Image (cartoon, rainbow, N blue to C red):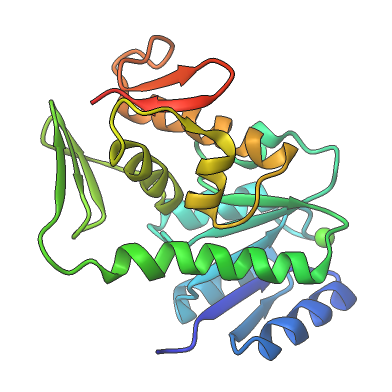
Amino acid sequence: MKRKRVLIVEDEQAVAKGLIYALRAEGYEVFWARTGAEAIELTSREQPDLITLDLRLPDLSGYDVCRALRSQNNRQPILMLTAKDEELDKVLGLELGADDYMVKPYGLRELVSRIRALLRRAYGELAATTEEQVQRFEGLEIDLTRLEVRLDGGVVDLTPTEFRLLQHLAARPNIPVTRSGLVEAVWGYESDVNSDRTVDVHIRHLRQKIEKEPANPTRLLTVRGIGYKFQG
Ligand code: CA
């Protein structure tokens, strides 16, 4: 299998070096951008499979970089690295399209395993589907071959994480799935307090994209005290 390529966007040299060393030891090909402008340039030139994005950069903010990358149709997972006080809602913001986040200071091993999980989820399981496979519901199609969601015939622009979240719930219509079950299935690691909120934020984004009235969802329903279910 081709080596996966990771772009690290980080202006602090010591932090970047530790991460580069750890990721190379895992067999990844690693690129390093110290500024937002460099990150955007390197992404278009090298097409990395995953990007870790520091929120505080000398030129642009991580938010701006994330938004710019998504607007240029880069669909790879983006893992935001934030300071504690950052607003999770904004970090995983709908218009930004980041897939996951970690709060500084983080453990290097934890970060590497998070990256491994995101890569595996994004390129491993779903990418292995070759036969025509479409989940069909009224007005909604989840195309596992093209990794595409269509709402009343039109393609909905989902991030890979949103796609996997919707797909996982839709594969179990009308069955409640816990937040921790979703974290393990979609993000690929064991859940904690923060990751439960990550699920909630992503569900909210999905509702904005596929529900006619996001505040009164008819497909992605909250199951109080448990988690969520897809109304099939
Ligand atoms: Ca920084």
